[in-house]
Amino acid sequence: MTILIANKVGHQFGGLCAVNDFNLKLHYGDLMGVIGPNGAGKTTLFNLITGVYKASEGSILFKGIEIVGKKPNQIAALRIGRTFQNIRLFRDLSVLDNVRIAHHSQTSYNVLEGLLHCGRYAREEQRIIDNSLRLLAIFNLSHLANETAKNLPYGLQRRLEIARALAISPELLLLDEPAAGMNPFEIDELMGLIQSIRKEFQLTILLIEHQMKLVMGICERIHVLDFGETLAVGSPEMIQNNPKVMEAYLGAIPS
Image 1 (cartoon, helix red, strand yellow):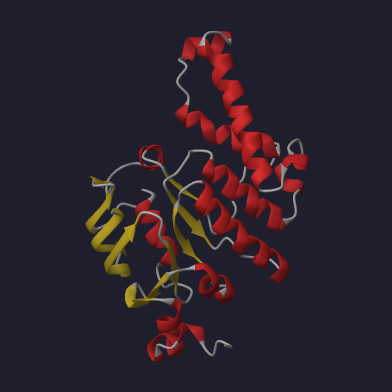
Image 2 (image 1 turned 45 degrees about the vertical axis):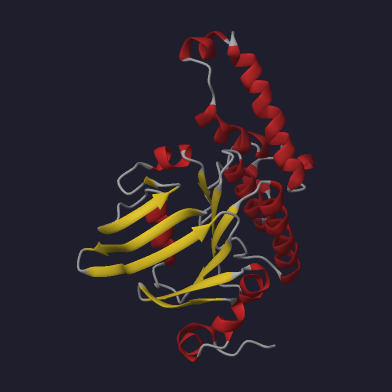
């Protein structure tokens, strides 16, 4: 069964075509990578899926629902989560509060209950705290729950951002360069973590990444973009040995 279908999606910025005739079909449980040179249209694609930009043309269906034209909060409510190429944590809040705040789009108490701290408020807030701590434990961040987010090392900030994205209980998770700025040891850990959360949370994952070790190591299919156009789609082996891809982006990859 398909969870996401993009059909003939295009987007222009003025006279510049950022994405052209893009087609994608994701099945439940897929782990797919999107690669390409800088400026290939990768982050623009994520922004189209999450409602930051409205596609100039084409259709994007999530679980059969047309999401082109929907606002980012409406798309998040449908259970599409994401991280960003440039980390967007609440830097002056604690690690715990960064995860807690992401839950509040799903609370059921009303404004009066929130103001008076009564009714469903206490139950909901305790549920949020419990789930936030559970997510921090999965990412080995429990001991840093009360630390200010901006004080975390870069690699741990990346982990926190993924934990926060999981707070909305997504079915589709978009990871925009999750390994950016990480050292080889952290990348190895991240590969295992992505596989683990995929299984535990029954996620479909679409990721953008420049670290070929990560892409080739965990992605089952890879979609290659170049100047907004699809250059190739296939397994890691097919992509690694595609002459056009090698010329446009990858270079020689050691076997």
